[in-house]
Amino acid sequence: MLMLKISKYISVLLISLVATTAYAQTQQNDIAKEAKAVADTIAANQKNKKTPFISGAAISIDVCGLAMKALDSRFANMEASARLNFKEKYFPIFELGLGDCTREGEENNNVFSTTAPYFRVGMDYNFNKKHNGNRMFGGIRYAFSSFNYNFENPDFTDEAWGVHDPLVLHDIKGKAQWAEIVFGVETKLWSIVRLGYNVRYKMRIKQSGNNWGDPWYVPGFGRNGGSAWGGSVNLTFDVGKTARKNKPKLAI
Amino acid sequence: MRRLTLLFTCLALLASCDQVDCTLDNSVSYTCNFYSEGSKVTLNDVITVTACGTDSVLINKMQGVPGIELPMSYWNEQDTLVLHITGNGYEMKDTIWVKKNNIPHFESPDCPTKMFHFITEVNSTHTFIDSLSLVNPTVNYADVENIQIHFRSAD
Image (cartoon, rainbow over all chains, first blue to last red; front, side):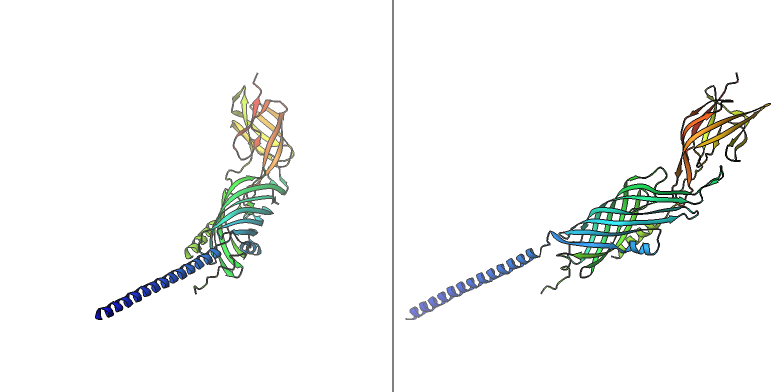
């Protein structure tokens, strides 16, 4: 009788053990399934958040050039640009500007002047991997300008022959091509408005002028020479898919 | 960011540096050297050069020189020069005509404006000058021989 009771208890115990184990196994499987589902959902969400190929477009104006013109500087490059945003990394850009210069000699009355457009095309690369509203650019440009320039010397005097005849040379034709290496930073101010600045190293590729003399200033390039430094302060209006999504969000 | 600002400031200062690079030797004249029987010679007589159309004396009583440097008129298409030679007991004159194109030249608003020239033709009255050879028609800052004046030989 005692043996029968013992075997009955053992049987009940075994059955309970098996049942508990089976239940626990089922529970574990459910948790694993749930965890996998959550992981899949997160992956799917991340996939959906991936930066689109065409992420936006922007137009900019150079406030520095406008300020230089307003302050009556010796020369000013007033420019605007339009650019596309590919995957928040590549920014093909087109820049159009108006170069203006009136330069008087410091110790004489010579006057050089020109006002002409210039064009640049190129590409910027955003080195900032985080989509936090800030961009750090490196880029290259090809630039071109075809322009007319003037040179006047009201005191031009032939001393040996004693003839005073002002020298007035107008609409001298010139052309220039150059390349630029650009480095700049840009940050989001508010909504679609961004502010950035850049420095540029400019290298002359080709220049054709006139026997009379080379232009003192080349629109878009600056003071004429083999190379020049430049820069701009850009107010940018950035529209597109990543333009508004750059605001950091809390992970909740 | 502070480093970036410093870098940009340095570059801006670098870009704002201004230089005035004017040619130092900026006199424009043409050189006529003297030749006799094909060889370069020194003129021991006294030479004076005047120009028609002006009272200026371009060369005043030079002696013992192998050649002369003359200015050109800025706007005339042709310069007419009279060479006066005074020797021991004689005095001679010869007239030279130099036809040219005038090319204004400037480097920068800060530098002097000059007139370059391109000589197209030279001629003379052949009193004591046998012939003139145009060896370098471009007249600019370069210090080169432009015209050879070949004198008549003594016999």
